[in-house]
Length: 113
Image 1: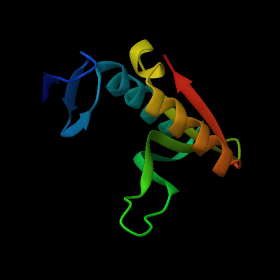
Image 2: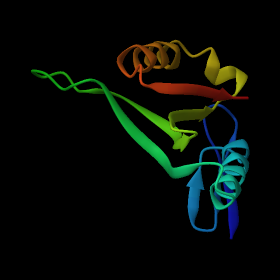
Image 3: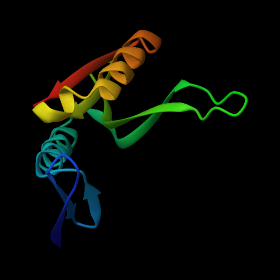
């Protein structure tokens, strides 16, 4: 079953086989990754993985980053995000991406257009 709803970046949320995605591109990339996993090219595919960038302290909320996809490829831990041109320019996203890459140096970060 497939249906959609628009969000602030004008992309459409998609529900595909009971799984909600933030965009059509993200849903398409998930389908590609599922095929790669079935073929044995990648393993341990996970969606919407939470990374705590700054833990909660005092009355301040934690700062978190949700990766679209995480998986293992050739022994490397991959974090992948599907982003539009508008999202790539968002200052909060840029800062969180930089913090993620700094704090989790054991990962390979990929941004998919």
